[in-house]
Length: 369
Length: 89
Image (tube, rainbow over all chains, first blue to last red):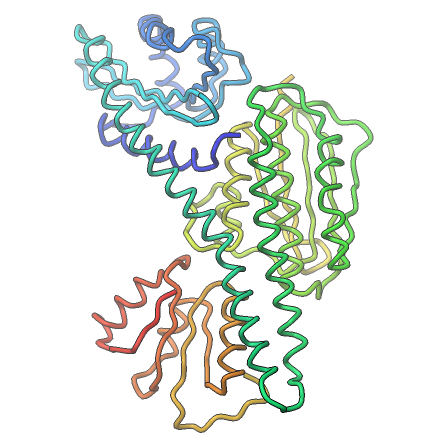
């Protein structure tokens, strides 16, 4: 699977690109599409030709059907690889600039290549120069992203382990001497056990992500995937008295997606739901409902818990309304979920549990027939 | 902590960490050692409640959302001019 940090990578690359190209404006739906004419596309096809044979993702603004269809024809890119992102453009009368982010997937690592295409007499030279600069930026961004990812993983594991150590030391102190057993001993031991399990869950989620490695798009049966992933959580949920209730639609269309990535996202959604309930000691209920449904052109997955809810900050991040801040206990899961959903051109929503405390997370994925 | 009596003069150990489990564990450990602690879930909350009349020390998480531990130290040292002994975690 691709590292979740590729979102950061992309954002970093976009920021670099914006600085370098100094765009006057983001292309709007009219101007952008009309400027994407033959010479631009041919130049693009020429540059991208060097990457033929590898999966390519082209990120385009506005999801313009006409642009996508032209690109598909020109570049022979499977439709499933075409996502949506942005195009920058400047028209100062002398030259027209556009920037396109192209990411290539290679050996489970994502490399971003940014091309700046200019319709000027020195177009090719400019493209080549920019390409070298982008490669350099890309390498630096990739290294940075990898370090950030490793740091995130270490932090996720370290937090519960620190708590385990502190709780154990507290227990030792309470057991010192001949004094009667402290009434705090039992809750301390329970917390110790909870935090050990929390560390185990983090490792389990990371292991699951690393073990899932298929990169190709295929037709994904979400109901089957939900049954599989839900099954992985039944035993641990039972330890806390939490019941996982599958509520799957009888028949939902298959979606085009990367099975392992979607499975990892589901794994995190359910894991986070369980975590949210354990954190409040299941005070608001013991049920996690996992549902699927189909609506026109998309499939929805719902994970509903009876936990303590999500912070505003985490909700905003989950739904793509804000960037992530460091330090959130559920950060890694959120990062993975948002990455996978963006990769599949889907959407994530948070809603309060209809019965009161708790959350509903809804992942909507297009069927892309 | 509940059930533990401390002298009003006893210094307070302020614990600032966004992770509830870490806060709880540190408080439990302090309590078991007979120390007086007070925990805060964010730097903002701590700064809003801390006054120079309080003596003690600070156990501060560096990696927190919104206001990081560095931001808290920056405010304490350079804005509020408070030199509270601080352990960073």
